[in-house]
Image (tube, rainbow, N blue to C red):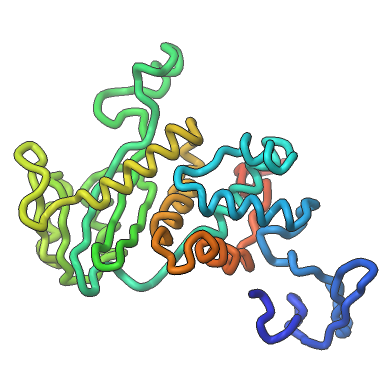
Length: 291
């Protein structure tokens, strides 16, 4: 996957390399600082002391478990610590991120909806509830906006700050082609999108389906997402929420892969290069100023 045309030096791209069988490394014959390298260099595996047989098993598990898999279970299966498994899984989620300049709505309607992610107030300890819950509705929870293209069956999800008009309009215009059919609920923040889209909405106080106008597809994705978060991960910090969204969106978008589980695994494995994630970056320590 990495070198379809032969092994090349990650630093200078030269193919004039030799293999050091005693160390299981390659060596570039050009004279520069990083002459020796392995296949891990520049990938999510870089600088990891764990062998690839553990990494690839962990990737298979997270890519193919419909509701996700906890770091505790991965740690037990691979015989590594829970913290190591947690770090591994976030690095694999990095490979599951998908970005595309192609917008939804090229040949079919697009559903847009939003949901709140967070624990129920009645299940919180009184002291924790006093800190997190201020006001009503989605107070103390995180907001996620989702778009589903009915033609392709794929979703895009984003963690956003609020559901005000500017925020939701920005999400729709960033990922949905102008002129497409757009189906939403009756939320007032979607008002005004009719200028750029064929905007139709359904009033959930009256009905959930009006002809082919509904948001049942994206709401089905919300049920899968929340089942994974509440049932498998239990508690997700807002700082990391986008990573769990990437994970669930990847599995959902690749659920009908023609090669099944192996195909999903290959899709993730093909994206491990050029996506290194350090522990300091993951935990936010890189953002803390030093004195």
